[in-house]
Length: 226
Image (cartoon, rainbow, N blue to C red; front, side, top):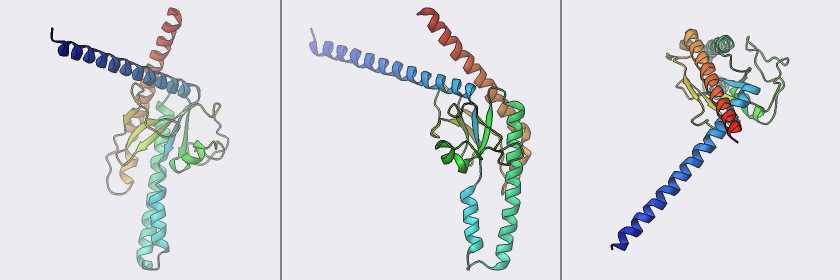
């Protein structure tokens, strides 16, 4: 008998059994994390971070304060800045309106992405935008620690769902949908995609509902079989 072959076969079987058990454990953990997330969103809400472009405007302000930039050029820079601020605000108001109209799964809140660290640290006052993009202290979260985040990813106009620390959610959680914002020069190309915003807000709502139902059904079956 070729014992070397037998030992190799036994080792391979044990190795793959361990890998299979590890994979099942990882899948179980991923499901539990996803189930917790969708239940917390349902209970508390989705917090959408509105792009503020803080770093961009800080760089612009440095140019405006520079002695090396001519007054004529500063005037042009200031005019461009003012136009961009108006365009961003218009885009943000439309984004909020799209979610208000189409997202039905849970409560939804909007804050500036530059306020995320304060929000993460527990700030819940004078931080939420109303539909007019004004900070509105009358807006309160009924369950301040029960939420997940919706964040625009880079310059690709992809909205993704992240955990409370800002880390990407993982499958099987429905963590991604794309906003088809075909960008032009500056910010003006963003504000004309209201239907795309509505469609994706609606898709998030439907996918969340579907996943939430599957979580509830699975948990019910587990209880019934205990």
